[in-house]
Every structure is written in structure tokens, then in C-alpha cells.
Length: 83
Image 1 (spheres, rainbow, N blue to C red):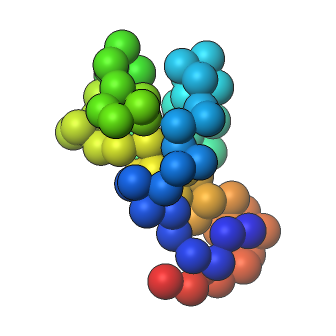
Image 2 (spheres, helix red, strand yellow):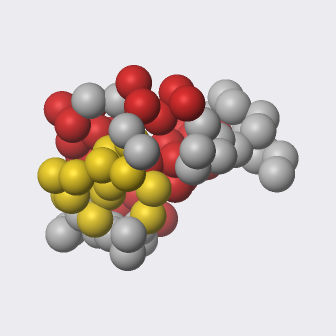
């Protein structure tokens, strides 16, 4: 569990490959289904900004996807997420 949300400009976001981001999107679809969180059209944008991969669901940065997955994982473990 990550107690602090990741900032969009966090340098760790540069380490994610397009293949890894695609895996995270699949995980979002799987974990989000029971909560009604579905972005069927979400894909990698085949582009980067300052070395970070773009996700195409409302022009959100990769950090948004990572933070959302962290929230869903915490919910599955019944752990509260502190912001």
C-alpha cells in the first residue's frame, strides 16, 4: 500500500514501459469492474510528455492510473486509504 499518492511528475513514472502500462490498464478493468469503474477505451496514447507515458482516458497522467489501482487494491484488502 502506498500511503501517499504519486505525483504526475514523479520520476518513477519514467520507468514504466508501454507494455507494463498496458498490464496496469488490464488490471484496472479487472479490479474496477465490481465498483463500476470501466474505461473500455483506455489505452496507452503512444506518446510521452517529459519521458512519461500518456494514458488515453481523459488525458490523465500515468500517476492517475497507478493511484487509482492503489485505491482499488486497498479496498480489496479492506484497508482505508489516507489522502
